[in-house]
Length: 150
Image (cartoon, rainbow, N blue to C red):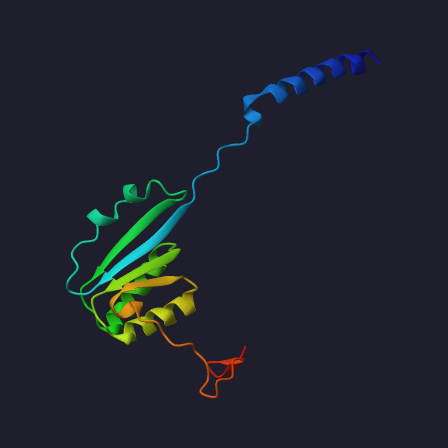
């Protein structure tokens, strides 16, 4: 019984010290980083680096890491290849796309890539900003999209 009574005060002391310990404070949560690809497509765009410094986004609740990409070639093949390269090279959470064309094909390509990768793509100017019509069958059946049942 003597060892039990000697252990009890020791356990109470350890418990009291542990409760008062600064080590019990929860660690500060690391800031989450949001990787956003900013793609400028067309011959009229220069280097994207100076305009997209991470310090520009310092007042946001998340750390925003802008990934600037300039595409001088506007053909569909190079657009698809370059966009897929960017999406596969880094964990991208979203894409902001601006181009200097008025082609609806750009919006269709971006819509297809967004649907296949589940990455939101926002077109802000040019052909990428064209609003596409809803993808409903010619019969207008809202239960069938792209010819397949929902």
